[in-house]
Length: 163
Ligand code: HEC
Ligand code: HEC
Image 1 (cartoon, rainbow, N blue to C red):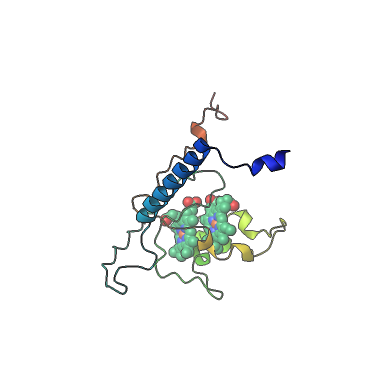
Image 2 (image 1 turned 90 degrees about the vertical axis):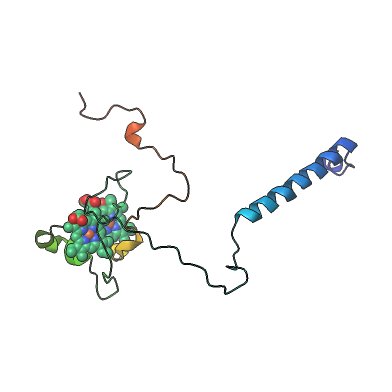
């Protein structure tokens, strides 16, 4: 029967393959463990280590193209010291519909006034209140992982209105 077959003793070559597999597994996990830095911090513990420099934010005021149409646009200006709490929202003092004439800032889009059921509100929806949950500034740093993202307009379709 099938279930009994599963408990058969492993044949000689099978045993060898299993041992080999285990050796490879141990060796590779040891190699991976070496690549990951100590979770407990520097050795010996509490040893002072030099702090890496704080990356420089890109604050050139040039709006960055979105990687896809409904990406939250990244913030092209400094937000250093802008208060964003339950009582005060510095971002809205420029980006809210009523204030955009004075500030020249792009208005938060219509989606920011909608509840999740699509109901329009007179004010910013609570779920869009904490801007930096979605919008982030950019720093000029070397990416941690290689990125092979390609823009969808490069994927070989004929753009609307191109003829
Ligand atoms: C003093 C006014 C002011 C304040 C405060 C402000 N912004 Fe802006 N923001 C602007 C202006 C003006 C632009 C247009 C680009 C530029 O000049 O930097 C802009 C651009 C942006 C953009 C890019 C929009 C796009 O379509 O590319 C985002 C996102 C943004 N701001 C988010 C924020 C967030 C989040 C905060 C709060 C942490 C904030 N802003 C605070 C004035 C402001
Ligand atoms: C839950 C995520 C989320 C939060 C929170 C959020 N946004 Fe956005 N924002 C988006 C997305 C997604 C877009 C692009 C698509 C759209 O307009 O909905 C966007 C678009 C924008 C734009 C560009 C609008 C345009 O028409 O070009 C601005 C400016 C902006 N947000 C500012 C803000 C500010 C200021 C806040 C805080 C009051 C905020 N957002 C909070 C997700 C968010």
